[in-house]
Amino acid sequence: MFTIDEMLSKNNQRLAFEHFATKNDGCGPDGMHVSELEKYWRMNHDQIISDLKNQEYQPGIILIREHMNKTGKRRNIASLNVIDRFITRLLSQKLNRYLAPIFCENSYAYQDSKGVMPAVLKAKEYVELGMRHVIEIDLKNYFDTIPLENLIPEIERYITDEAVLHLIKQYLFCDISFEGKISRKTQGIVQGNAISPILSNLYLNDFDKELDESKLCWIRYADNIYVYMDSYEKALLVYSELTERLERRKLTVNKEKSGVFDVSTRSILGYDILIRNKKVDVRKHIYKSVNQYSNWHDSRLEFINGRYHITSDGILNRQDFGLLFENEQKKHYIPVEVSDQLNIYGNVTLASNVLQSFSNREIKVSFFDKYGRLIGSFLPEKTKKSAEIILVQSKNYLNEDVRMDTARRMEIAGLHNIRANLRYYDKKHKGDFKEKVDAISGYIDALNRAPSVNDMMLLEAKARQLYYTCFNQILETSDFQFEKRTKRPPKDAINACISFGNTLLYNLFVNIIWKKGLDPRFGVVHASNKRNQSLNLDFADIFKPIVIDRIIFTMINKKMLTLLTDFETSNQGVYLSREGKNIFLQMYEEKLKSRITIKGKEMSYYQLLESEVQNYKNFILTGETYKPYKYY
Image (cartoon, rainbow, N blue to C red; front, side, top):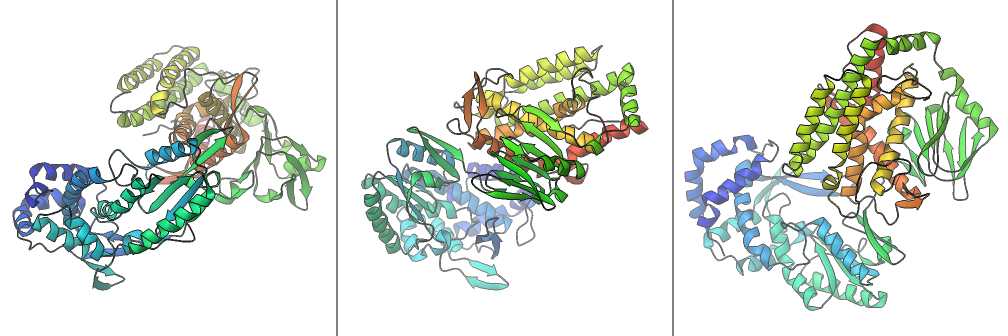
């Protein structure tokens, strides 16, 4: 298949070095860093190559650490010396080149041009053919239980070079260190070794071929096997047969996670398959990493300053020292002592004594219609601002030079963050957006020369219009198409997401502005006129690209939203459905609590928004320089 000389060729070395250039500067058990690899190889490669060819090379001891993921599942991960990582990379590149073509089409893991999404789309194809039952087989501790005495003959069927075979066996029957004890590995393959994924596919390749010969609708992704059937009874028989075949290969089926299921009740590789009106769609499965109560999202328990979102219909009453929300499904208690904002999206009836609780606890309440548009807000009397702060804000607004300078700073920061988004996705699209990035830079230069606030707003509008033309490329899907920005009403799903997300951000900034002691009616870029809120729009324009737009790109590219269930058409517009709003709200709160490092200080995005308003307040009260946030 390939020789040791081919494995050690200059071209194969170059590809391996290019691979490590993309990795973090990790350190192996021997203390050598990845950044030191190339220099070390130049100094020692003659001896190492000679040892490899003469079958005298001895790999270093592999350090095994137990790793527990967020679900509590534990597995052992290997840490190899950096030089062994390099050698196994050389080996894996050749193994992949020669072995991948012999694997079945429906084996999707650890192969270039394959992966999770092609596997999920294949599952969707099966369901569209009428397969409504799925056999799921999970192999328990697959890598750790592969019998080496059975794997070696499989390798020898394809690898004939003695030096290559010897090297593979050296890494299979390797010395490992676990919890301070050193032993020789005799069972299973090491997770973390570059050759292990391709060998795991090789061991099940004959099993895959049997599935192909049986004409079954199947998918295998590593240790997860899915077979789609049109009959529950047939599926039970096939499940029993496949389990026996795997056990004959000395593998263990995890009976707790395996069985025959209705397709609509399961997810595949992190995606749900949705069936409605005979239409089939896929959506990223939403894992509940935050506290959820039915249609509630309680962010206070995740320390995001007491925001509650109610998306279902019901009645809100006062109970003891808190609030009780109830409907036909459940009752939910809200501890008002840890709440400062309540957003209501459903048809909620408020008892009269509830408003007294809101007022006493200074809880701001915002009401949204079914389309996600803000209807109005309840603002406790205690939160209303003193005349002193109003006079200071009005003085700054009426000072044309001060307003012009501040507006220019805000507008430049907003376009800078748009440009930062495009630069990020420009790397992914290999230069597709370079001209647009340059054009945005031109608009930023023009902002520095704009003679009035209105001229600045016109430049900003043109820049955003240009930015929106990039959305279809960023989204990488034909399901969601975006032609132009439409607001009242939004004409497509992307506009529905933008409108809903922007409304959330506007409302959040209003709450922060009130908490910081400012009045949102006095804007900078947006004029203070008949509009009740202006300053929040100024702040939101700075952060829309890096908060709301990033959320939208993530949800759609990861298929967390689907046109089938998460959107609805009404009044000639397209809006998020209740289910779609719940998904958006969860991602929105996750974004606000995610961490970012600024000038060496780590903070959440919510804290970043608070600091932005505080910096502006310091500016108008003390004259401290105000520098709107720019994302780098």
